[in-house]
Length: 112
Image 1 (cartoon, rainbow, N blue to C red):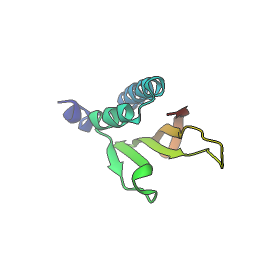
Image 2 (image 1 turned 90 degrees about the horizontal axis):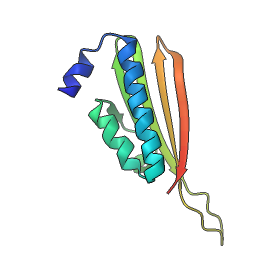
Image 3 (image 1 turned 90 degrees about the vertical axis):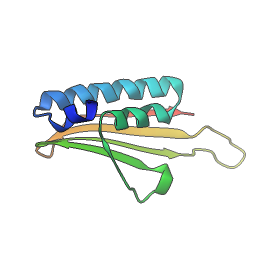
């Protein structure tokens, strides 16, 4: 039912609402230090996962509705150096576009 609703969306209002839901999931994932929370929410909202050149460690999701596009991308990196262990850093970028113009964008980082 949720996916059917998204496919029939006809306003930028719907996209702003889903942007807010994903942003909330990002904040929850940061607190819980879990990437899976965001992945599950993106799938629940009907975003389509793209293949990325970075393999399993880089992911991107998109949802196109009319002239609007919602994108979510994730990457991680290891800031450790020789004799300097540090946790991995996860970087999420959530953006909303209409007619290829960026309306909203946020980057959120957390260590795990």
